Length: 622
Image (cartoon, rainbow, N blue to C red; front, top):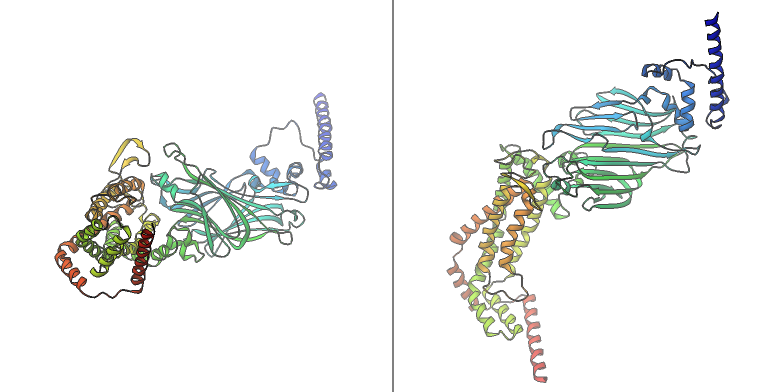
């Protein structure tokens, strides 16, 4: 009897305590989120002496729509409190993958918490992750009709994975009820780095505050994937397309901010790998931020840059409906160009004519060579040989002009000495000599200027050629990064902690080339106001030695091969093709012939004569 009495008293006491707690919950619950019927359901009694719920017990409770949990969740989250009572609120991830890409999508936030490229490794043989360990987030901030501001990154989505014709479809729903929700939908196709992504809502017209549009924010910190973090950082940037085809970028400063309208895509490029958000219907506007995370490459060794984009979304009839895409993959020109959505602009091939040369000449030609040659290093050498042979007529004209100027040097010196006190007469007589001899100092400059588009296009091509990544040649184990023949026990500013051989060879070749060109025409005495050519001749190879020590060894290999071939061509021209005695004889013959001046030369000479006459009159007046 005593035990039964005690039990009854315990039960009565528990009922009283439970009643008080339920009454407090009822009075503290907002009237617009909890109905009287829901409050009445909370009169279910739970034994206070029971042990705390285990995970499995909580799941059973959730499955039964535990009313107390729902009331508590609704007090914090309003209508979206329903999502907190589902099993997905325990956390967890869902994996979708194909043969090239693996994505893990978190229940919390509904976004990708891990993105791994299956076929690639970093410089230290670790799998390439574009998203991992919280380096990226996607959050939608929105307001509700009951005055709350919620963030999806703090809420739990319910996953549902299905398959349709080989495509994996993952639906992540942030639920208000079974038929009312905000949905992130991912669709992955076999063999594709691009997946469909949509944001839509159903039945939330009376839940979402239509007077304040939601705001989507996408953040990412770029992981380091290459040997030289400073070199990789140079090609890490935020790129976006706006106004139906124009593109712009941020990323080379310590902190850069920008904003624009009609945004078609946003790309976070990490040199050879890129994360892209694309939309079928352009975002009305967006704000962008890029922050450099490498202040000291010896200390900052994990991340390159931090990117952030803030995108206002528009509600239509109180609902959201956006069809988009995600791309997680290599910054490979061919792959990006095949999507036919202007993604090739993400690859920095150069602007204007430089980009055209790369797109329509070097990229297809290099792809052709590398398709049958045994290594990419040999493909670089063969392409360099072909380019130099095609440019050899330009080299010939340049060297021929230099040879003519060399032959005329004694006569030019005589003119300089004879009219040393009359600069105008000296220039006039020099122009007459050039005209009679059929020579011009400009004829040597023009061929060199014609080669600049080719050289600059190749300067852009090699650092952007994804095919060179982790391809070895001779002592270089990666043609897309620097080669190493010796490690230094210390770090030299602008140079690094290693010695690369290809830049040394390229610098030596450039020095020899400059000796053969600039050196042979260098004046013994430097004219006032003119650059010191001898100084430049020594400075240029030195700058290249430092600048290219951390650059792609494929680019240094190209410059070394190119200058080596150019030296060979110039030696053939000098000792086999060009005879300076014959040039001198021809110049003397040309000087005897009456030379018909073109309109520009004639006009220039008339101006010089008029100026000389005016100078004489001024001297007489004095």
